[in-house]
Length: 93
Image (cartoon, rainbow, N blue to C red; front, side):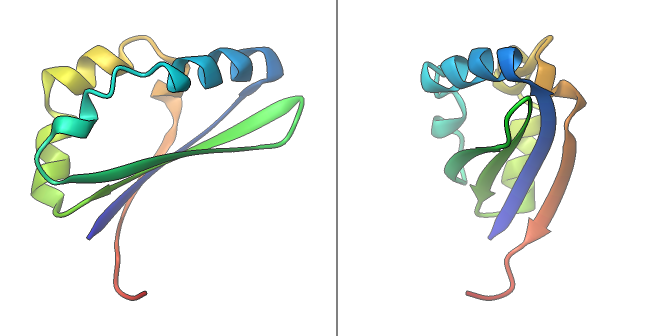
């Protein structure tokens, strides 16, 4: 399994907007082949850090999503576009 993690920090005001957007997200990623789930985590106050964690069955399926029109549509002009992005491979549970 592949785990993709995005991490970014925003102001408290921006954090409220991001939370609302994730609550009402269009769920376009959910239908992509190989997608296994998403968690959105936050910590802090004042400056709020978010972590978006998605799980995929393969790097190839994640890559296809990252190159898709759905990815471009959901991420266009968003604060999280400047996120630190890492891809990990699950090696144990």
